Image (tube, rainbow, N blue to C red):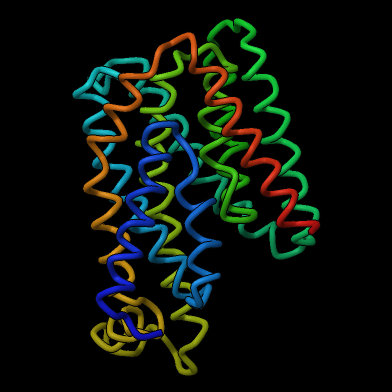
Length: 276
C-alpha cells in the first residue's frame, strides 16, 4: 500500500488518538488501532509488528510522564515498580507458553473467553467494591493478562488495569503501571513475530546464512513497513505527556466509572467482532 502524505498524517492522527486513550486509561491502543488499519487496507502481517513496536515506544514515553506527574512511582523499591516487574516477568513466560497453546485452540473459543473475561471484569470495576491488595493477586493478573496476549494478541491492557484495581491498587497507579508493563511484552512480541516469520520464509538453513542477509530479509518492506511504523510511532510518542496529564486530572471518585465503562466496551467489542 503506497504511503502518501495524506495517509501518513491520517495514521499519525489515529495513533495519537489511540495512544491518548491507552496512556490515560491504561488500555485501547492495539484493540482499537489494529482493526482500523485493517479496514484502511493494510495487510495484517504488516500491521502487527508496526503496532507492537510503536505501542512499546509510546508506552515507554507515557510511563515517564506518569511518573513525573506522580500518577505512579517508579522508584527502585516502590510497590509500583515491583508490580511492573511481576507483571512483565510472569507475562513474558506466559506469552510464550500461550503462543504454543494457541496453535491447537479454535480462535473463536479464545476470543470468546477473552471477551467474557474482560466484560465481567469491567462490571466488577464499575461496581467499585473495595479490595485488599495482595501480591498473589498481582502474580495471577500478570499470568492471565499475558496468557491472553499470547493466545490472541489482545486482552492485556483491560485485564492488567482492571485486575490491579480489583487487587486493591490505586486507579491512577494501575494505569501508569500497565503502561510500562506492556513495553517489554510488546517488544518481545515484535521480535518473536519478525524472527519467527523470517525463519519460516527462508527455504535454506538459517544458521549458515550471512547475518546481514537475515537482517535484510527481516526488515524488508514485505516484513516491516517503515513508513507505517514512523507514522504510528510519531503519534504515539508525542501524545505521551497529554495522556499522563489527563490521568492526573481525572477525579479519583470518577475513575471506577470511567475505567469500568471502557473495559466493558472493549469486552463487548471483542465479543461482537468474534460472533457478528
